Length: 178
Ligand code: SF4
Ligand code: SF4
Image (cartoon, rainbow, N blue to C red; front, side, top):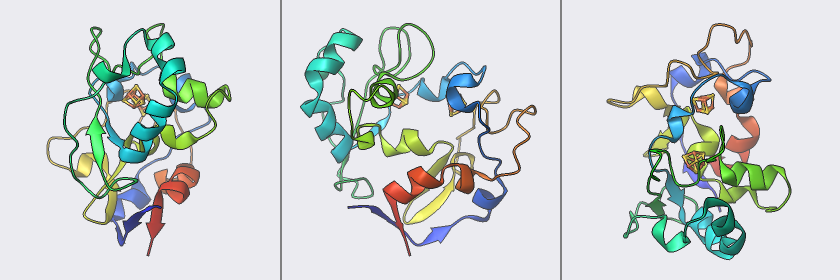
């Protein structure tokens, strides 16, 4: 199952993509993780399936990692979403306490969890986002700003590719574009 997209905003074609450094090589302070993330229902289900391994790393019970209610927003994988909470350090509870990055990304990269959909779609796509069938850039939404140290806007990133190109594998896995 994928999320249906019928429109792509012009800004998506103009927004610079990531270079080879990506998130881990970027000097940013991961401020895109300083909120909870809206987890697709599918991502949440995978978290529950893999909770033993995740709980050991984050040192927290999965039951304490999410808000109490689902959004009922059908524009997520498996037609619903639930928001993660922030930890004591001000980052999403799944952020790596030892430094940069996300525990879920790391488990996928290490091959300890095979299904990449355990990472919320919204995190896999940032700074792309979507709403009402439109794929857009995060800062096209009211009061939403891309962190100014993000790899996708830093000057030393000289990639010629736009964000649709550099995020193509994620877009292909998450969206059904009409
Ligand atoms: S799930 Fe991972 S990538 Fe997404 S906000 Fe939380 S720590 Fe960041
Ligand atoms: S998306 Fe941008 S701000 Fe967020 S971790 Fe990656 S490079 Fe940093």
